[in-house]
Image 1 (spheres, rainbow, N blue to C red):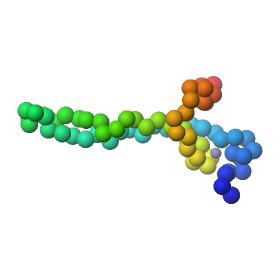
Image 2 (cartoon, rainbow, N blue to C red):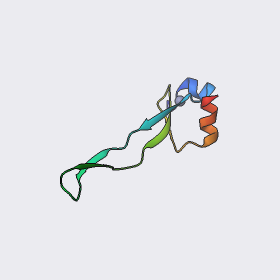
Image 3 (cartoon, helix red, strand yellow):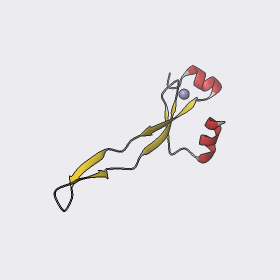
Length: 68
Ligand SMILES: [Zn+2]
């Protein structure tokens, strides 16, 4: 069964998920200090509490629906 029964019946129960970017440490020009350089943007997505289905790039309406 591809989709959780309750998700089919009631719809997904989305929760917020964030993934911190991997931080790469690089020596600066002075070679004395280490500078943190984010390797990527923070990944922000929704995940279903029940079936772990994920939704990338949620719309503001979908986020609002969760907060209410
Ligand atoms: Zn679901």
